[in-house]
Structures are given as C-alpha cells and as structure tokens.
Image 1 (cartoon, helix red, strand yellow):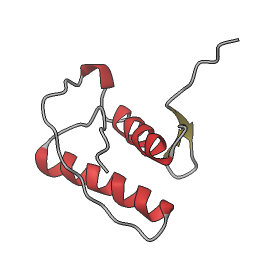
Image 2: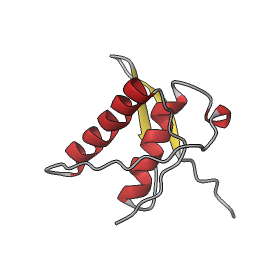
Image 3: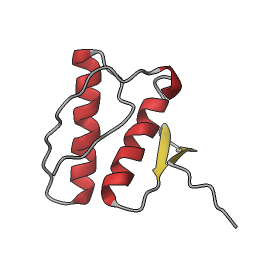
Image 4: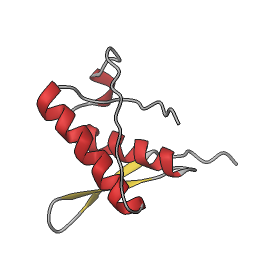
Length: 91
C-alpha cells in the first residue's frame, strides 16, 4: 500500500497557528517547515524559481538552528521581498 507523504500540516494553536513538518532527515524537515511557513503567506504554486540565495546560519542545538533558519528566511522576505519555494543544500 502506497502512503502519501505530506511535507507539512498547518495546525491550530492557542496563540496563533502552528506548522507540523515531516521529513526523513533534519534537512528535509527544515525545508518542509519553511514551505509551511511560506504557504501561510502565499500559494506556493504561484511562486516561480528565479533567484537563489545562500543562507548561512548557526545554532547551539537543532531547535535554535530551526528558529534561526526560519528567522533568516523571514528577514529575507522582509528585506528582499522574496518568497522561498525550494531549498538546495550545499554542505
């Protein structure tokens, strides 16, 4: 039986809205969390892939790394007026 793998689910949260992201690796979960965040801003299908940004972040643990990742994407959204659709990791 084939299961459909979801990237993320938007969930109700008492303070606002939440995102539950899925993936096989931490990197995939981070990408899917970003997809969920930007899906709250616009329809991802309306976004074309035209620009590539290098994003470098650090964190003391996985949770702080995720927060720093999302904060950097929000910063780029606010300052560069870009919405992200995909991520390509370069280690």
